[in-house]
Image: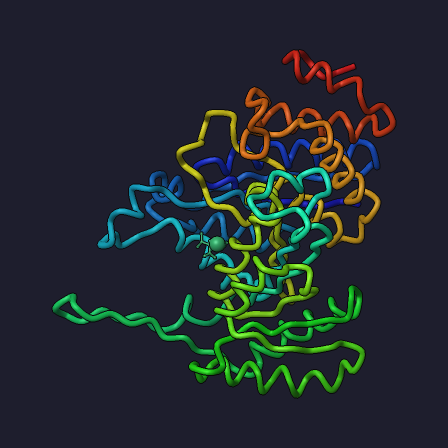
Length: 372
Ligand code: IPM
Ligand code: MG
């Protein structure tokens, strides 16, 4: 298959982790005779520094002319601590999602057998957890009208949703539930918010078209608690933009590290693949960033194009690396010498030699070349 992939590494650890994902995709292309062409472009704080714009026109243009986007991370502390900043790196990502119509953000959350002891949550609680979060991505409070009074003492962000915006992602979530365990939970705050009541109404109506899916509802505060108390109760979660942002970070604790969580952002026309973690600037250029979320995002990219065997091979490689403890310090406190590149090298090796599993393990630990 020929694929043009726009690579937007962004800020902080974005470039390091994306590099490993590109390496994995390149190995897949060579093993399966695909032709993947990567074109790199700027987004986020680095784009502000270089072009004065968090999403330069050339980047958007490139994204609109590619088959898929591989996104790294954005954000820089110099903006976080400056509430008066007029341009912010996050605007780049938000504008990209909006302009590309990426209304559904799919975030799988899984407790890996080999990492059960690494989560701060008890093993028996998280074991077997397998959730797919469908987060609405181009509406709600993120994109509603923002106001700041002239005296600077009052501010507001409007949360707006239309039936159409709710329906299109809800349909995707219902279909996902049909292909999984046939359970869908709508997370909202319908006891307080008008917009949530619209979500409930629309989703309830749609449910009639999906009689094989068991629909239930949870208020977001309760959902946040249930996620920690009993995450196994969830199959597919459907929720609006900001609730999805919050509960997906919370859910990442189940897997042991936010550095493991991948996501796909899809619309009618385009698709982008991005780790759910941020730019983690404190870790940048230290070789300690976990590239797995980015590598698994690359696997989601492959699945999106129907390359299921290829995606499965990447997932197997990731599982093997976790099993052999070839992982970065966030989930590897006992051995903090394994670097971002080491993990990427192992995944690459595994793709080339899936049957030959233990050989490279030694090399990685000795810090030697993994080419055999
Ligand atoms: C995410 C991130 C973004 C969001 C930020 C960087 C704007 O937290 O993708 O979850 O809030 O959507
Ligand atoms: Mg987030």
